[in-house]
Image (cartoon, rainbow, N blue to C red; front, side, top):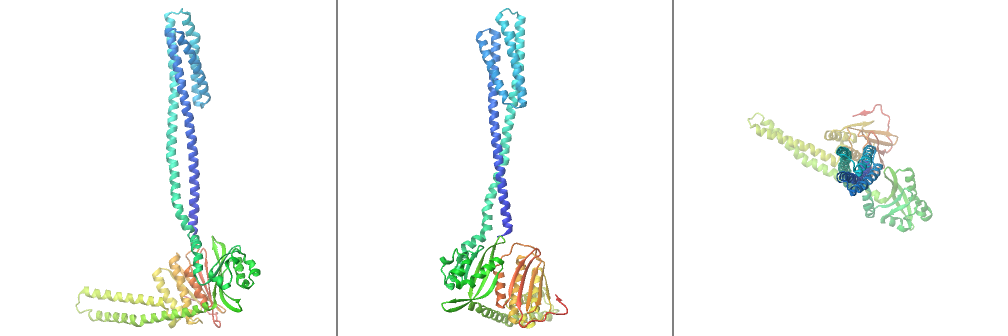
Length: 543
């Protein structure tokens, strides 16, 4: 899996969880605010009821003073008692600010009731009041009424304003925060399917197509998970090893010595590859079957997921198929060489003739008075032909490194590197001890191809500015390391290009090891040297 995509997925999941928590928090807070609004609305309704009771009480008191009717007195006493009761009930549910004002209203209301019961009502009932007494009672009643209405209006207006502000704030917060959280969640939900698909695409491809692919290839393959249990065996392996899938699937490889004694030497390295987490390639194994010996070449390849071993794959081929590969490669290289020679002898000869003819025409007519436009056209034509010749030589070199036949591997590499540096703006240094390598020409071509593929991969995938190619002779082995300074990149996977390098190396008895670290990516090629080679030289050569 791609580590950057995995980090992005984890970040998006964390953002999704955070947005969900925030949305839940906002919804919970909004619900609490709505509940508070409902409570305030209830209090406001009770306050309106109280205001109505007080108004009725004061109106009936005024009517009783004016008309001395017992009915108004009874209504006054009823509403005064009800107003006091509502005031006390409402006072218990108010906060400190409202409670202080409500307490003042209650005291004011009690004073008004006391005035009515101790002064106004006895005076009217005695019917011995003077005009001055009546005027005093009217004046005091108006003063009490105005004070009560003022205090009651202040409480009502303040409560209404606060309730309106609370509703507005709740709506604004709900609009801003909840909508923002919903928008983020929606964007993340839209993004996550694509990221999930991109992240798990390798696994999906493996699950959906790997089994089909293993059935189509001619190589016999067996897959064992990291616990040693066989999870897959293709048809080629069933036929080669003469076993049925139901007899091996879901079985542990450690049981094979007792279940399939003849396969012990074949399956045992699976356990070694699992324990050591290393590949065992090109293992020569013999299988006795029906009285005849079958020679095989088997690769044991550990597979990793999230830098953790997920299992080991066994890939087996009959030995004669492996022997056919060098012959096929020789045939391909001979055909490449023939095509390269054809290009050189025919197209190259014609191109050279055209260039020399143009040079002759330009020299002959340099001062002959030809039009400048014609001379410029001839110069441009000559330049195009020269560039075409250079491109042709590059194509010839890609088809077949003809310089190896003439001047050897090192010189051929130097020629190729000069073009590579110019095209890719990457500096390449070659370190070696001796330009003359005691290796067959056809093996040198394979080494050339592996180094060429390494440089191509660096140009495509690495952010490197320099590459070192180091040739080291160690006893009977030649080690060639290609190292770039591209830094730590994405986790590399062995694809077609890297597998191609391994296949080429196996054809000449060598091996290729890949490594990636903080400084860059490296390819280590090890090739046996026939008869050994002296590795003690006076001075290393650096190009």
